[in-house]
Amino acid sequence: MKTQLYLYLILFALISLTACDSPEEESPTIDIAAPVSIVELSTSSLSKYTTATGNAMAEKEIDLTSQIGGKYYLMKHPTYGRAFKLGDRVKAGQAFVKIEDKEYVNSIDLESTKMDLDLAKQEYEKQKSVYDKGGVTLRELRNSELQMNKAKNNLESAEIKLEKLQVNIPISGVIVKLPHYTSQSLIQQGSPLATIMDYSSMFVDISLPENSITDIKTGQRVEITNYSLPNDTLAGRITELSPAIDISTRTYLAKVRFTNPKLLIRPGMFIKALIKTNQKSDIIVIPKDIIISDQRGKRVFVVQENTAFERIIETGMENENMIEVLSGLEENDRLVVKGFETLRDKSKVKVLR
Image (tube, rainbow, N blue to C red; front, side, top):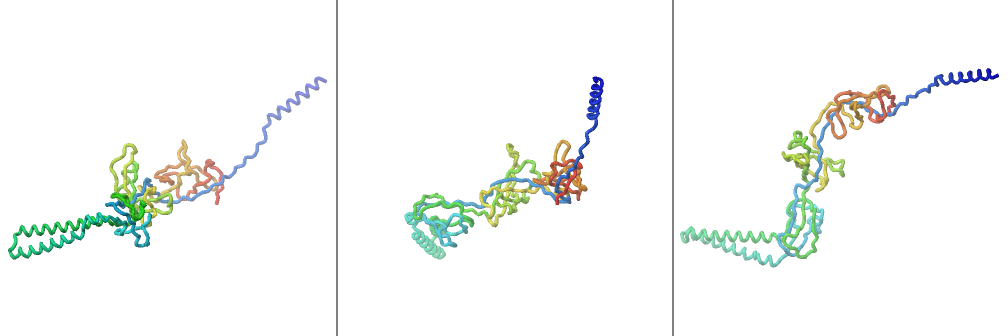
């Protein structure tokens, strides 16, 4: 009985060992196609830019101040028929502010000055007539002429002084500052009256990197943009360049001038200047953000018959978003631009339409 029990145990152990040694049935693998988007490559052009920023400034700006003290009167805008206001467009020569000071006017005594000139002219004409007849000396004639010229100068000085009582707009532009004074209030000599800007022409001072100094020249075209006006680009030119490099920033200064006919760019706006330093045509250009870089180099993927193949590429000139491909890609290659992050060489893919 014991012998039979031992035999059963040995047989059970052999069966168990055989079961353990038998290979498990392998589960079938499923190759899932990754969804990707592609573009078919063709030759294109690429421009390289140097970018700089700065504050736009009006080409013409004048601060008006009172040249004398007295009662203040703000004049009416001839177009609108009301007093000038902040933001008004104005033209050169328009009467702007009147200052009233009777004591000042009396001290000039314009009428007496005019009479002095009339008398001096009469005396000169008289002396000249007598001189022609030999009645006076040349010295006496010259003295008479001198008195007449002095009278002319005195009248001109008086008229210039009186002109200070009225302040005219010096340049066509826009009123950007207008201090408030109550009409007929007394203001002092030197009081600010307004600031006029003509910003139909503007300039911006920019700092350029040292490595661009051989690429940028006076007269070079510049594209002017502002973040609040993304669809409007103005054309400018580099008009001045400093030859000196700032040792702390490793930059040099440039002045860019541009026209602003619609007055879209306002004085003080922060603008971006794009300066084209190089351009290539008939080259393969791809987006920079689809390139995978690691120790093996720069890689992208192309699709052939629903399979993604890895390509090692060599790159050249680049700008902010795009880069030139010198080798590794050819025209008509189907380049993966979306869904490349999880791909491996020879991955199955499904091209999304």
